[in-house]
Length: 232
Image (cartoon, rainbow, N blue to C red; front, side, top):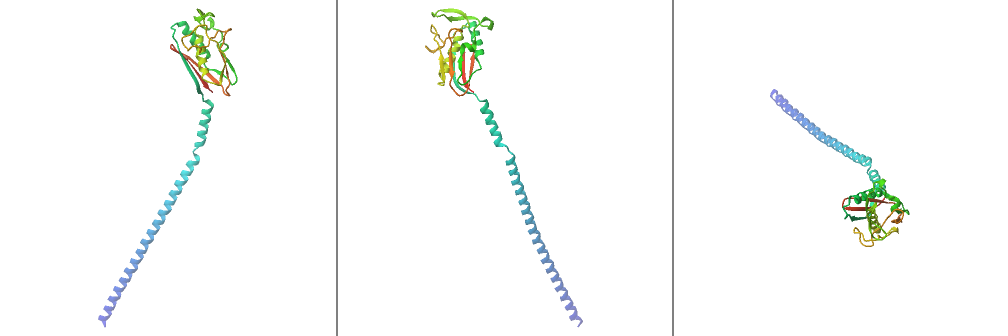
């Protein structure tokens, strides 16, 4: 009887250990599953937050970037200050006379930057004025009414006016109002392409028939006289 009780107690103990192990195993397994699920949910939440933050950042950057305003302001500035070349002509200086060279420089500097408004008539002699010694002009070769070379203040001015005349001819909307040929052939332009000037007697004039102003740019070097007409 005692032996049977011992066997029974032993078997009961084994059964209890087995049940305890089963319960422990099941509980631990369930806890691991729960942890994994929670981990996935946390990662998903983190991912959603990150994506949302990135979207918000892109959206904010797009809104705050004033791309349109920058382009508009740049365009307006360029349009307001733009100058477009509409004609250019140059003539070669053949004479080495220093007096003539000085006269060319004075006249070119006086004429340079002149603006002719729409429907305004430009006058060369009125713009440049008389060629006097007080202005720094020297005596150089000019033609008299018979085609003879003589010395006179402002000799060389006609090369500037002739260069301007040829630049004007390239623009149909600039109408020549007055132009005179020299009494003799000049070497710096083709025949019938010159424009003689002499204050108080002969002039070169043209009218700006455009709806915009033009600017006359003149530069005299030791070898060339260059006239550029620009739209402003």
